[in-house]
Length: 596
Image (cartoon, rainbow, N blue to C red; front, side, top):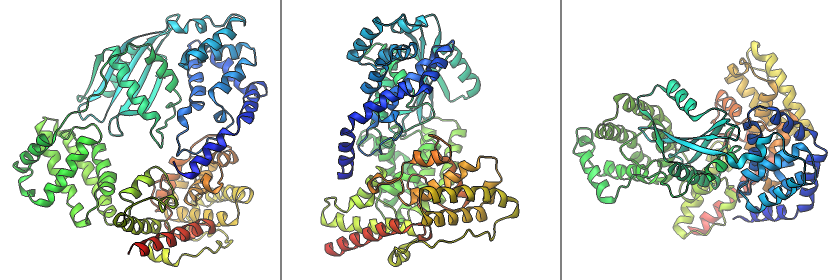
């Protein structure tokens, strides 16, 4: 754990009094929560209340406190689960009684359940009646929805609540990302209805539905939930992990001792035999040389040790991960050598799919994916990029500033320092720009209307006014200049993005967020702004603008990666950000010289 994260965790542990105050305010001074509870209780189906409580338990779940995660900012997210429950115990009301009754079941904490039940015993009778009968919920059927290519499986769990109401949990387990929960949701329908509906809308000859034992279903889901909970950055959708507590409650009632996902097992002898078989085939014979054999060894390493683990079933997603990330990041080799991988992969996919007799349509789709990703792959392997230790730290979201102090050996250190100089150059447009970089403040420049089509000027002006106001009230003139420059580039190069319907506030927030992220505005190590504060300024609450930002970046001709967001020129970087780049540049250069 970095020093920054240790300090961050220490600060968290010194705020119990403030958290308790927030907890009391949340119920006594915050009528919106109780109003939401009343609306949920009024819903004829219990799922409304169950989902509401599951969300509360999610934001107070200690598993969210990953050492690399930035602290959440809303008051509710600052609460511990014990403080949240304490706030409900302090406020006797029908609404808090309902919340406590559901928390007692969903939280999975025996001591907490006993504490809540003692309190509820002294309160008026719970209404509606099913709140007192939740422990009688039964899960009676489990179905596995799978595809022949094996990218992932959906586990459907059918449960029956007190009073006869049905619900179905749908948990998607992604094997390409490590056999973890990528998404899940719960619907107020019977599992028979859901299976029938999935069959109707899918109409896919390569998808199948199989009933599995309840014990096996628990083993599948529990392992995938556990891995997802420790994965960083976390996978989040509109419903996941908000429904995690509800899903875990359903699986806790299932029998233990089942068998979860079983990866295919391939030892070195079997893989060597598969390689020889391929190079003896009509697909591989023309590629039988040392380079292609070496590349196939790497491809088989990926196919068996990562993702679903089956080297004979290749999907478009599997190909994308291999070409867009895995090979460029994992294999340190000359570009001329790596450039041969797509041709090898096309031949091996044809061979492999014939071996397991997959439909030709699936093979064609996978080959099309290789063709689609090859141009970017060929460009990537010829471009500076983090590899080895640098790629690992970058994937964790650690700043390159942390990496200079890592204990590598002489050869590793020299390669690492040069690699990081190339990595820094991506922020500013190349090694020449990195060498010439200064930390003079950006000038206070007006917006440039040249080259912007007349039919979008009104829309662009609306966004500009919002951006300027935000920068004047929350940031400074440097950010205003940088935002104006990005807006002008997007409006001139991709005006179609302003011809689409959408709120101007969302576009403005996405632009400011884009410039802010490129400048480390939201980094806590630099005392940065909270994203939620920016969203609140534009009246967007806890909305995410990352998807809109990616659209805007593409329209402006920028790289659309919103995770490692780079605008590729000093013109969009404020003085403080350029100063930090210069500091890191000089540090890595000095380290490289010392190791020479």
